[in-house]
Image (cartoon, rainbow, N blue to C red):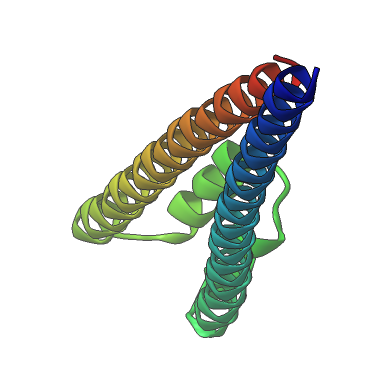
Amino acid sequence: MSEDITQWLEEIKSLKQKVSELEQDLDTAQASADSWRQLYNTEAQQRRLENKSAQQQMEALKEQVRQLPGGSLLVKANNPIGSIRAEAAALDKVEDLQLHLSEILEERDRLFASLKLEQENHAQTRKSLTAVIGDTVDQLTRERRQIKE
């Protein structure tokens, strides 16, 4: 009979050890999830700051355009095509029109490049965060299964 009790006590001790190990693993997984969450928040904050900086820069550039001769027409108009036509009508020489057109095309190209870069950064961030969240969920699922066993 004492042999049965000893066996049961050993089994209880073994189960307590497994529970302790699983709790440690769970704590590790939660710490990892917290770390990734902090990284995500840091990245999100950085993106917000970059966005705010870009908006401030755009406002500064708009102000510079307003100060240029004929620039107020471009900034004030809600219709970019109408504003370009109005500004082009104010120019007298073909050379001025060509110069203005090249400036507009350069600005368009710069804006497209900026937009594409922002889209790529956004896609990369989304991809990274999705992978991290998936890994964390998988790890937590494994931990819960082990606890149930």
